[in-house]
Length: 242
Length: 220
Image 1 (cartoon, each protein chain N blue to C red):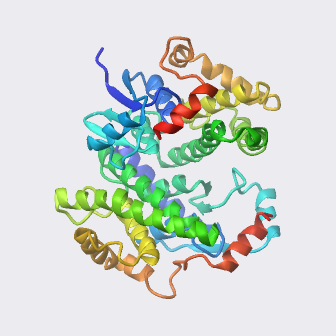
Image 2 (image 1 turned 180 degrees about the vertical axis):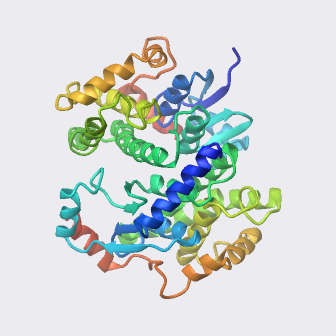
């Protein structure tokens, strides 16, 4: 997207309207799921947000009846006067608005490629808890394989090739935030996963020390723990799943 | 006119089809390199051009682009098909993400075992007619404009018709309850570049033939 005067003045308007509209409000379960990447990005950008957790079917049906969910689905984020749905749409908006989407089209293209890669990896982990124990064993092997053979080598090489602190354009972008989210998620499952990736280890240390991210990683933040039994039960109840 | 993009995929719709649509509408000439066997895909993987070992791959503007959404975003932004500002882009993204969810269901349908096909078809039709199409119908109704976002042609006006046409292949009367979408589809189909793309001989791909499915699955 071109950063013309029009774009800057419209971004100013967006920021002003967000100050008037209040903090972004997240509608989801009290757990990671598809909303967690959004929490990460808002936190990294230093944007305070509030959350309404879905716990009952009635809450969900009320959202449906109110017409709040464009495609009857969550995540939904009230932000800048919009009721945004679709995870990638929400992430793209936040990134663009808060200067985390690169300086030009080509940087944006790189960021998009990188976040789509980490998205695929995160999605493998996101559904892990839904599997039976045998399936989980297979999935764990797949997560490990994908992380160490497909995704992490790419990001290691990116960091090596241009020797900068960040993945794209020498400043923090959405790509860095989603990568650190992915790294930490994989490490919860495979603690030694970064053993062959020294640059990613440095990256992890550096990014985790960025003040907004450091704060998000501390107990008491809005970061959510990995899914447990009660998360599954709640989701099934809200969506009427057997 | 020189070719501006090179597409690497198998000779079928899959995840590349939306990219073909958008390039065609943007007026970007493209060449296609089809692989037919697993060996050919492996060769491509070994050549180092596939960032995550996956296709689609689109060579464009000096980049080896992978990841469908990254490619679509780039083409749309470059060719003025992504709205005038952030909030329009947000709406466009919401609308096209939903079409991609529906497209994924359609794409995976031929891979269902025969016993599961009828049920899967019913599921897809249900989602189209109860979840997605009502949303687009309402968008058109609420603003009364010709295009989905910002009163100008955008990628949403390419991706939604693409999905509608694929759904009509599965169930010809699927738009029966959506008069505004019928009008929208007719209008968009008359856009000169789209009209051309919809004609025989274009680079648009047809539905996968039943007998080709095992071969395609072997590639991947």
